[in-house]
Length: 106
Image 1: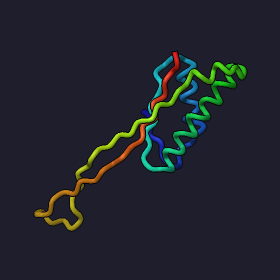
Image 2 (image 1 turned 90 degrees about the vertical axis):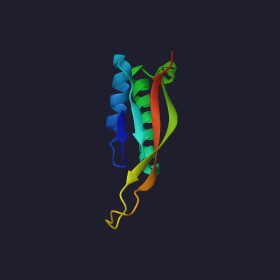
Image 3 (image 1 turned 180 degrees about the vertical axis):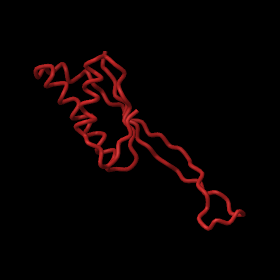
Image 4 (image 1 turned 60 degrees about the vertical axis):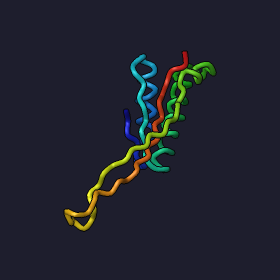
């Protein structure tokens, strides 16, 4: 799994995905929280498809070798209350994470 942030270098992630596909290794899942990070993850997947096309000498069929499947992962995190009082209950916060699973097309 690769955690993607707003400042993640898209080309490095794309290169890693394309290399994993070319070597036949396991393909990563891109994890992102927030719109800017999700945008970076999508850019990385698109750039990886470009790298694959260039490596395949612009063969159109090579573009079908990589598919990205989205999934939403919701979880609740218990955080302590801000005042420091022992009597206060912990606050439950919802975290939403977008998972982009990279897959090979058979």
